[in-house]
Length: 200
Image 1 (tube, helix red, strand yellow):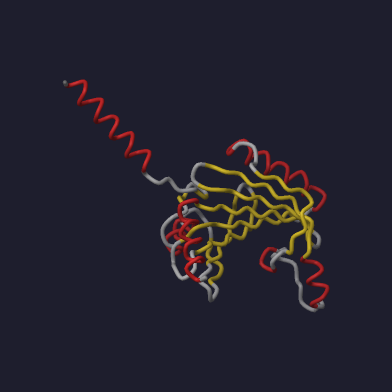
Image 2 (tube, helix red, strand yellow):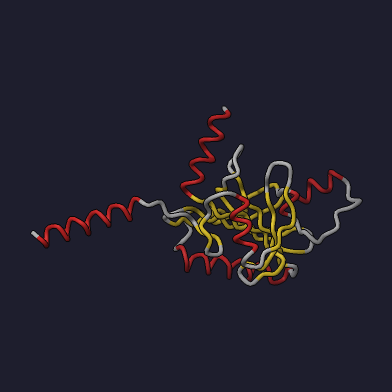
């Protein structure tokens, strides 16, 4: 009888543990809770808050994966202060080594998360202004030239974990290479999707 009770308790603990929702992490911090709380946790890891825009997006700068001055954007669920994702922009200022750096990043992500579930090479993408080289002075460049410079050929890799996805995009811009990693939490991305559907 005692063994049966112990087996029942172990089975119950196992079921409860498997039902607990695990969240995708970024720098060891679960992508969950409010944007402000998540930003504070990153600040405690050395990131510096750089700006908040009118739509509630919070940006920080800091060291990520050995790269200095990375731009980190926290992605909130629309009409909410809850976070669902994190976008990191890494600028490699020496184009000659960008391909090697991109391959190194892809290799490390593969080591941690397994082979990419989706691979797209030489995709044509329009790069948002916020993903261009942060230190490059765009002042005085014509709008048409600016738009032409935003159209890039990119390599895209998508990695999956039990708790979310990690997208890696690499492309060259101006006199540098750019890697953008986007960490999306699976549970909170459902809330994001539902928020968008509610708007339709």
